[in-house]
Structure formats: C-alpha cells, structure tokens
Length: 87
Ligand code: SF4
Ligand code: SF4
Image (cartoon, rainbow, N blue to C red; front, top):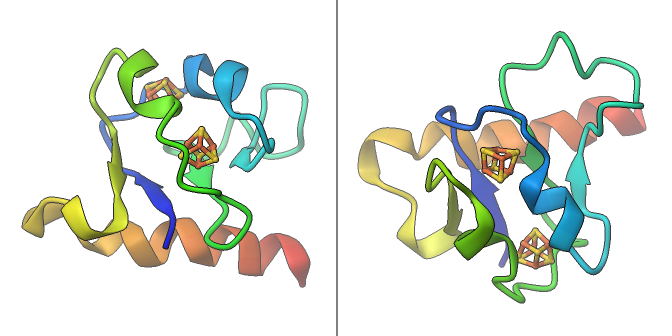
C-alpha cells in the first residue's frame, strides 16, 4: 500500500520535510517541479508511516484505501509519475 496525493496539493513541500524515506517528488530543486500540478508519492517506496498527513495544510494526502471516490484517479496518477521518471 502507499499514500496518495490528490489535486488539492499546493506544492508547499511540508510533507517532503517529514517523509523519512524521501518518497514524495518532485522537490523544488528537481526537474519538472514547475510543470507538475501537484506532488506524488512513490507507490512502493512509501512505508505507510502516515507522518505526512497531519502536516499537510490542505488535507491532500490519503492512505490508498481512504482516497475519496471522486479523487481515485490520483492513485494511478501518483504511480504514473514514477513510471515516467523511470523510463
Ligand atoms: S506515509 Fe510516510 S513514507 Fe509515505 S509518503 Fe507519507 S511520510 Fe512518506
Ligand atoms: S503538504 Fe500537502 S499541500 Fe503541501 S506539498 Fe505535501 S501534499 Fe501538497
């Protein structure tokens, strides 16, 4: 399982500061930061610690099984971002 970021994310990087395994990207210093609409959680590197959830000012991070129905497309969007990075 992994956590998922949805489109209400404002890219303020609060979650990146607390993630113990650096599985949220892109950071401001990485290519593509300006272009992406929101940040993404790596689908397998995430260790499900939940540390990112309380620091998010826009409540944009959900455990996989709690992603709201109308935002379920972002489950694939988070994974697809890393597939594109790897290719
Ligand atoms: S749940 Fe933990 S490991 Fe996963 S993205 Fe959030 S802070 Fe990182
Ligand atoms: S803390 Fe929330 S709003 Fe900020 S970058 Fe992370 S997911 Fe986006």
